[in-house]
Length: 348
Image (cartoon, rainbow, N blue to C red; front, side, top):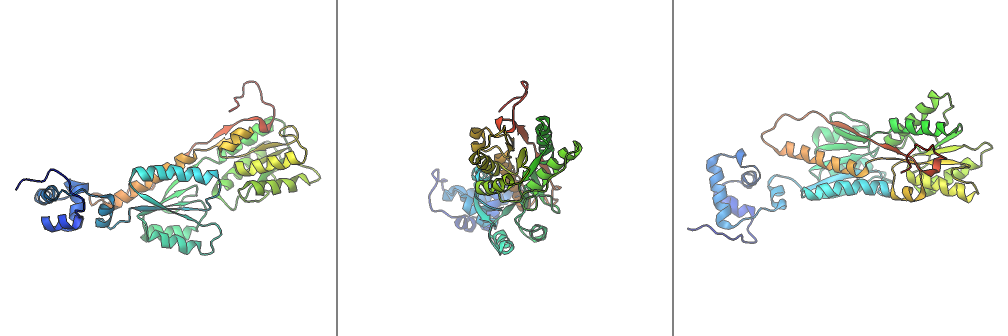
């Protein structure tokens, strides 16, 4: 009988398995990596595929391999350009790899740990970002659940971790502001709420201590413009107001900038303001900030998670690759919001 030259629609992996006399897992393995099966089995499966005109779908392969064809990603929140950029970087790579993405935001959820554990049962791998759940939950999933990758979080156990440089750039920012002659500082953001902010505050504090300048306690607030505005209004009511305000992110900085302007102050003549992230609005506002590779964070996480899922499903590799940890570089980006610049300084 002459083999069919045209692929038919509607043929399932189950029909191929029956025709070849093998399991659907063997059909999937043959289509994915023929070297994993014997030559005789491979010949039977490929003959059945050709005779039936079978074209494997990603969903069919996933079902045969006991997978969900979906990855999970856990965020502290989904409000704001920073999280949007990370998600875009992650989803672009996941889509290229043929995987859907289930997103869980833990902000405001009393049962965040339970929600994360439930998601772990529905996906082939998961990214956990920031301080969304405790280390105990991460270790529990790492021990018996799907592969994990941590983003913007301190390392936990044997889990892969991707972060950006916070302390070095924050210290560089503090030194830059000191060079402008500023001596009274405020830091707006909550180090207890985010490992990233904790690193930024630590670098900022180290820069001030090295210059013999007192380190102010952080003015704790959330990561949005209104929170920054409210924090600035409180700062500006102080008898001695700061000369420079270092903010945990650009949105907080834009809120501080707005509050200062509303109070009749000039930025930077009366008050220097800096942010972190380098979102689009910061560029239009002339905000001095620290640029971090937000999309690259998400994209790297997606690639690493795919590697771990592939590693787990491969019969050829029983030894797990050692934990990976990477710190992506950040860059101080000087604009007009921090004061007059020397001629050699580049304003981006």
